[in-house]
Image (cartoon, rainbow, N blue to C red; front, side, top):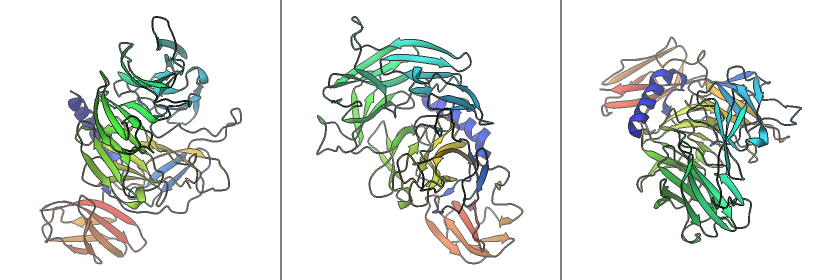
Length: 483
């Protein structure tokens, strides 16, 4: 059933929104151009990537709050379910078209807060005292849905209850959520049913909380996007030689009874749950040799290396909050080229380049932490735009610029013919050509030419990518078919 739903969502996303996404291409190292900080509500265009990307600065200093507003984290969705508004923490909501504040939120009364994935008017709040609340942005009203107790009959409260902590999510159907709760030094993992308002199950990990405000031995706990699984990422300093009672890495449990299923990764790092391009549930994270981006399947012990390019090294973040556009993960590069890249979750090597974040990322606060909207057409991120003299960061939204983006490589400036071709490709362009490169769908350069003619007769039949570099260092991309 979920595969069917996935297919419908994917079809609608591709059919209705394809033009809003950057060109599918192989990954290329493109360094950021020189660009100054845009003014509040002003736009700059990043033309260094295959499709020009519009970057809008959407925040300024708010004197009443003494704060430069920004979104929370790459795994906490700032946009509501239909993408019409977004929120900064539990402070305020803004109109996505004008970027003007609509209303202040109740703040501490609903913090921490998470958008409903199905109802654009609702925000869920999971309180540390065990209360589960829902807030309606239209009526400005708060309701208490449930109160989770350590002992229901005596209404004995836990020491603290957290979602995540900080990196957990509700499933995309607003059905299940996984919470962690402290009782003495023990940690309870609790699966809660938001539809039927009851605790489905809970599992105690003795001593796993410790004496700190957050679990001492656990980084985060979360349900997967379908709600079928619960994942626990144990403290990322732990491995098989230094485990907590045999627990380490990223472990997967059943949602309905919290039965242990498998350890999908021996080490936990920045990552997020999502779906691959075929509708299988996966976990995407950095781990391994420098720059290795991995995809782990939740239902089996299978790992796919999505990239081992050094550009993906450093303190980048991963987000699969684009739940209406499954099959992609949005990744930032804090070091090296500093790009924001949507990576297709299969073995094709296809990516989409959403421009550069222009942040020094010299501190964790300055990390861009990109998060896509539910349809994956826009990406929100933080940046100092290269300013190392201050700790100030602003928030930006990046998306494909429809006015300046070419629809495809066959345009007024460039033509590639014939396409499909069986032996010789001819490229016409209105300025001198520096190089023409042909790539496989896995991103391997297999042919290169310094002229406007490319002999592809030696290639096997199939689909390839073509890159055209002009003398002015402009890059044009497209697909060709060898027949």
